[in-house]
Image (cartoon, rainbow, N blue to C red; front, top):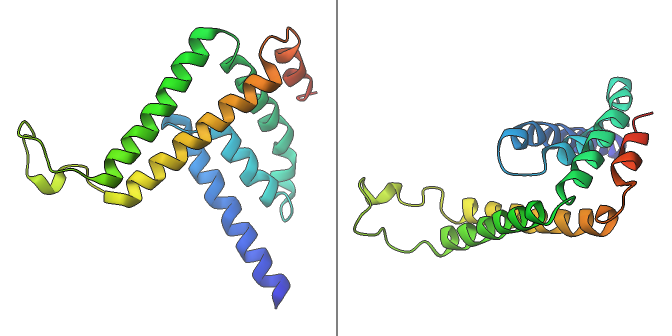
Amino acid sequence: MKQAARRVVLETLGWVLVVAGVAALVLPGPGLLAIFAGLVLLSQQYEWAERRLEPVKAKALRGAAESVETWPRIVVSTAIALALVAAGVLWTVRPAAPAWWPVDERWWLAGGWPTGLTEIVSGLFALGMIVYSYRRFHGRDDAPAESESAEA
């Protein structure tokens, strides 16, 4: 019984991470990393997931290396992550709608604190990924090559 419950929890979490990762490919967030994490969990039960681990890992590492190749990329990424945290704080505090707000006040910062908390966590996670990518790849001429070698 305990083994079955563990399998259900891990499989559910794996699918949630894969779906969230696919969404994060077009929304702000570390899409490939979430997909990779989901596939790691699903690969414990499914062979098809295990076959897809290395290609996704290679693309995620290449994306991480490219994200810190230049200072403008680092600055813009950091600014966006900080803006996401700031928006989350605003959503959590939820001040009254400003006078210029054109629609009903109930639509001002819709979603409330759950949306704000999600934005804060996403922004902090993004900042953590920027620091990780910077420490691992910045200034290394072999960084993209290292991540490409993971594909082989």
